[in-house]
Length: 150
Picture 1: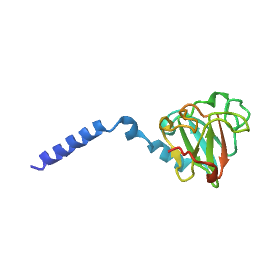
Picture 2: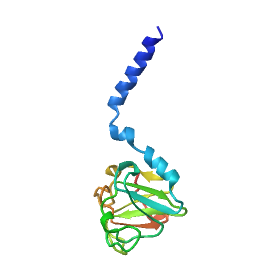
Picture 3: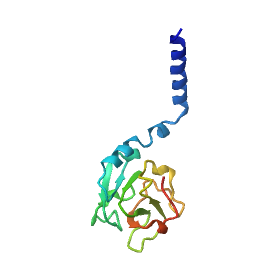
Picture 4: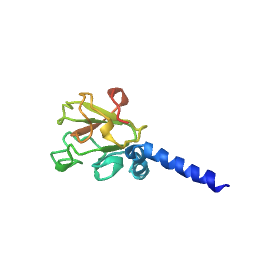
């Protein structure tokens, strides 16, 4: 008789798994491990969802991910689909524009959030999707952010 309740439990779990989208079920586990492994004081960016496909890391600002002069190199611009913040004192403000004028829309990733495993769910203040659209970043105090990536 115990086999019937166990079989029903397995069937119920399988049905529940079919209802939950694969992206939601997959969101985060690799980013969680990447956060644990990340070096303190750095932000990281990844080409794929859930912190897969390492693009680069930075401890300072980078006003143009496409110019190959700082942490991020030419091919890294407009490629990030997940980001991670293991900063010590500041939040990271990501922009879809370049240059030290820090123009274009932005979104921030707080130290307390740790990471955003799927930027398809996020937009810049300009309304543009944050996925595959980050062109620069800088470290800021939380008071300079009013749009947060999650």
